[in-house]
Image (cartoon, rainbow, N blue to C red; front, side, top):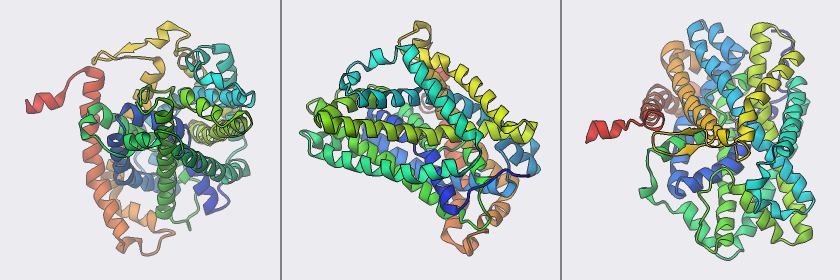
Length: 467
Ligand code: PHE
């Protein structure tokens, strides 16, 4: 495989992979999912899923990528299991679907940067209107997709690596600053309570479904993004410590984002937490008011920096989302990289148009589906439920079965051992064996069947089995 390029160092890979993981998923999606899922109960489940189910899948994805040095479709073929490349194909489809709506939200975030620069704190209160202005947000979405495509067309270059190395830590410090500020506000404690004290009566299948989807989404798992990034990793690098760092960084930032958001929500609602469950508009509706409270000068500085960094965090994720279908087209269909990039970007943008228009501007896409539960959802919600909440955990399920029973554990061990002496006799190996062979397939399989049948087909298997 001539000239695929690669990461210049282990740190470069970690930063790029953490850049893929940390994004809108942590700062935009995680807080609103927690809010909609009843607070701490969601958080607990999310954490359990990340460490017990997702971390092992992450190690496996990186190992498959590094072993084969290929894209997610080619990788399974190269290992000799052509049929299993269906996992890769599903991953590419997920990548296209996720990027299609992700880019729209990234455009909102970028637009907010500009609003903050201009001191327009009112935009938060008018968020519902803001997202119906399809020409404006469409323009931002085009800028965002074009920037993503430009970076990806340059290859796994110093570009992605260097940018992530500077921007990620900066974002981290801004969030810490905002967390500290949020604690000083009236009613902050009520927000912390909502976030950290679980109420188990809030847990139901819907919450489990969303928490699992969120864990996979936030860690960029189940669609081969990390097979793709893993294909650029050196043989001397330790996959396990890298994966551990990526998981901790991602979960840590999501956790902090929640710790910042809920005291703010409590402050702005006088402690009632009303509107915490409002969904995708949460950070966009809440944060501008918080920045305004910092005063006109500091508010503009902190607010615009925040949304600029959020846009960068989104950019390192959109880059990885686009990289997956592009690497596939380049490797498997011998298309020139630049041509592949711009064609795929165009297609994804078009697929995203209904998501762009379906937040009030065009009624058809706004009230797009009604689930058997009676909930009416937007086009964007549907794409999100299908791709991130359904396909990603399904991908994780299939990857773990593949690694444990088809490719076989010995081969997985062999690959992980490169760069990690002593892996075979370690505790980590035992943990991975149990999770990959039993926990992941069983738990992911059960949740998949239960939730899909309930959510999309209105059949409650739990009721059928137990009552
Ligand atoms: N993990 C990214 C985020 O949290 C989104 C993403 C999902 C990126 C899947 C790549 C693959 O924002």
